[in-house]
Length: 390
Ligand code: FE2
Image 1 (cartoon, helix red, strand yellow):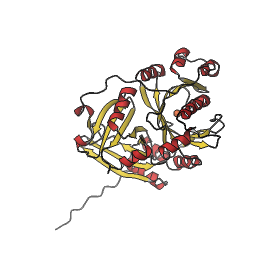
Image 2 (tube, rainbow, N blue to C red; image 1 turned 90 degrees about the vertical axis):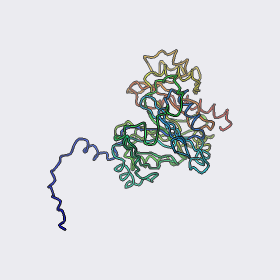
Image 3 (cartoon, protein in one colour; image 1 turned 90 degrees about the horizontal axis):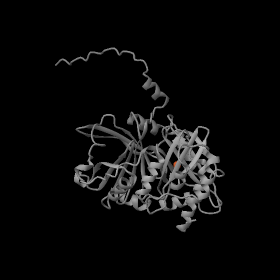
Image 4 (cartoon, helix red, strand yellow; image 1 turned 45 degrees about the vertical axis):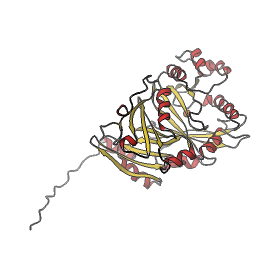
């Protein structure tokens, strides 16, 4: 039998598209934070907390009813923020010992990328530790690809490619209302996007992880805070802010510095049993409205002393918000050359003094509120002392 000959067509030479040129500069091409995943002992109640107290809408679900017998996952959204809450149902699931050791915690800060295989191959070449090789999930609505690499502790960065998926969040998930009648309909709280995610690492390990973000993910050091910038009478810490090429992703890393007493970072490391995400900062365009709503729904925030507000006018200058409202709500203000920012920090959201949230409104400033560090850390230490951990 005569073998069919494939006609070879001489390839046409192509120029570099601007998209391809960008990829040569930054082969990882991280676009945004795709989702933040929290592991929780009781995912159902944790999802309820974030929907009722923080204004997230439950949009998708996967669990025993959908054939996923060992774990339940709730997907919550508010504007550009996706929060994924997962919990184990059986002792044999690997998430069970995970939440026992670390408590409820952020497991995954996932990046959206245009090409998962390219992200994985490139980060592996650059020395990353694999957490999940590129994997494809498919259903009638298309497919999603994901790979993951480890960062500090047992935290991972997934890379997610979802441009070919039209369904509800992820193949295998069903719309939340298919299984649950009641959706918290208290409305959103004006939270818009993930502004930054901060990690706590062990003393002496900050440089190691700074190098990891530089070498493996191509991030750059944006700001460096020394222990002189961040110290109180009792404790100190150091921090470096790492950012990707587009400056969209900002990941500060903290380490404890030597001081008279135990720092909040050491308290975290003790209760979390190792490094992990300390806080997730969520951006709002109207912090007064957002914090008023969060307080009304029972979210607890750190308080700074009243005297803090006496110095705000001279330190921060003119701001468009009403200073009395800012003081009443306990919101902090800071200014740098580019503008000002308003921020506030919740108390830990779980029993262990580990994960908390920051709400931030940026009016030009791309900083992190360095002028507030002292007042803030003193407030943190008052809480730490109440817990008997200072
Ligand atoms: Fe922050």
